[in-house]
Length: 341
Image 1 (cartoon, one colour):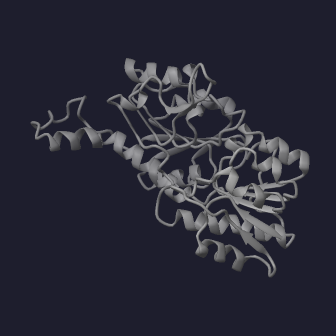
Image 2 (image 1 turned 60 degrees about the horizontal axis):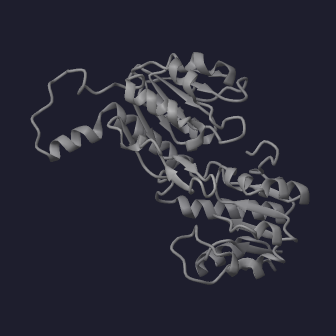
Image 3 (image 1 turned 135 degrees about the vertical axis):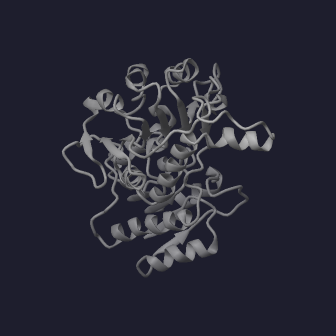
C-alpha cells in the first residue's frame, strides 16, 4: 500500500509511519519549502496523489481528492471534518467508497485544559487584574460587584457536547466541586462526572440553570448556528460562555449584543468565525463585530491544541487508523460520511 503524507513530513515522521505499517508499505511525502505542517502545495503532491491508496493529512490542497483515483482510506489528523465537507470531499469519498477516519480524542486533554483555563480566567478576572498590576493602579474596591471574582465551587456548568473533550471538561469541573449538566444528541447514554444528561430539545432549559456554559459539540449541519438569540436569552445574565468547538456554532450578532448590553457576563473562545462570500466580501476570519476586543472577552486563535505531546499523538493515532485498515481490522475512529463525525 502506498501512503501519502499531505505535509512536508520529516524523515523521522516518515520512518515512524513506515515502521508502524505492514512490511512493504511505501510512505511518501512532498518536498519543498513550508512554514508549518499545515502548508502543502498542490503542485508538490499532484504526482504523488495519483496512485496513493492511503492519505494521512493535516490539511488538503484543493484538487487533491479528485486526482487521488486509487484512494481507499483517508486518515484526517483532526477531530472535526467540516473543512473536508465544505470542499466536497465527504461527498466524493461516499461516491468512491473511500473510508474516512479522524483522531477524535487525540487533543482532548489539551483542549479540555484550555476550556478550564478560560472558565477560571473569566471567573477570576485574570487579565483585568494582571493589567491593573502592570499599570500600578490603585487596589480594586474589595467586594465591589465590578471587581469581585466569581466562584466555581457549588456552581453549575453546562457542557454542550459530551464527547471526549466535553467529558474531560466535566471531570475537571468536578474537581472544583461543580454541578455538571450536559447536552448531547444521545441523551439516553450516561456520562461519567455528569450529573444529568439532556437532549438538544432541552437546550434552553439547561442553559437557564447554568453559571458557566462550555460549547464542545462537533460542527455539523445540525449544530451550525446552534446558539442564537433565543438560547442566549435563556441564559443567566451572570453566566459565562466558553466556545472550544467551532466559531459558527454560536451566532455572532446575538452574542455581540448580549456582551455589550450586559445580557451576558463574559465570553471566551479559542475558535472564531470565518468568512468567504466571494469578491464582494473577501475571505477572512475573526469577528467582524470585534467581539474579541470587548472588555469582557478573552480568547486565543485556534491554539488550544498547540501543546506538548499533541503533534506526536496526532501522527500516532492517524497511523493507527491506517494500520487498522491495512490489516482489515474494524476502524475504531471511522467517521460517518452522512453524519460528519
